[in-house]
Amino acid sequence: MMRRIVQAGADFLPVDGEAGVVADASDAVLLAEHSDKSRGAGRTMLRRNSVKAGSWPERFIYAPLVARLAPMLLDRRIEAIWLRIAALILALAGAAAFWWGWLWAGLALILIAGPVDAIAGRIDLAQLRDHEGGWEIRVLKGMLQSLAILAMGGLATANTGEIVYIAFAITAVLLLILARRGGGQLRKLVGADNPYAPWLADGNAAIWLILPFAAAGYWFYWPIAVAIYAYITLFLQQNMQKEAVRQRD
Image 1 (cartoon, rainbow, N blue to C red):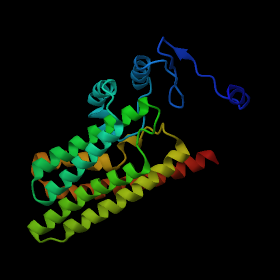
Image 2: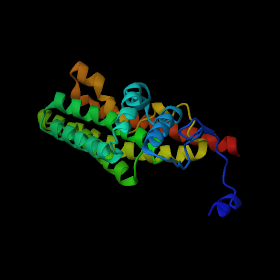
Image 3: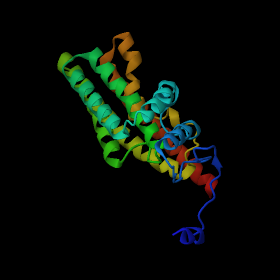
């Protein structure tokens, strides 16, 4: 097996420290003699291989908390899948609270879901898995974030009698789906080092956009702001894709 690996042109990965930690562990396979070395390697991977993807809430708001808690939970052998499930339950409970008009409870629940999911992503990263989870997790997370926006739009329409609120909520969800697709196409063209990527709209950014509206007491304007944010994101993505194609040609 080793002969076939060498003949296949395997990449050389420098090793650092007694734990056998590779210097660039993003695509590595780690062999450890016992659990202490494995956990030590995982902690080093967390420090050296930070998540470069993600929108502005993940990068600039709760990144310090995630960086502190992820190694602690990794030491306690907390599996990322349980944190993923907890984040989904929190997001579902937050959307339900919005539907029933429990605004502050819904806000707390749906905001907490973001850091919990990010901690799971860091643990997956340390264990050499996809930090975004499988496609099922991504779909469920997007559905629940969309459900929260729709719940707020439905609550606004029920309280004011103005159908424009639910219309904007539906528009926001559709535009976020298009923005998600556009973000994937943009990454294929310009890679993961796009400096503007954190500021473009996605599910996490849309959820955290609620904060200024909650603080000002204008909850019902949140879906409208999300729709505008997603539309601006689509416009910027199209221009960046055109520029990337022009430079490539």
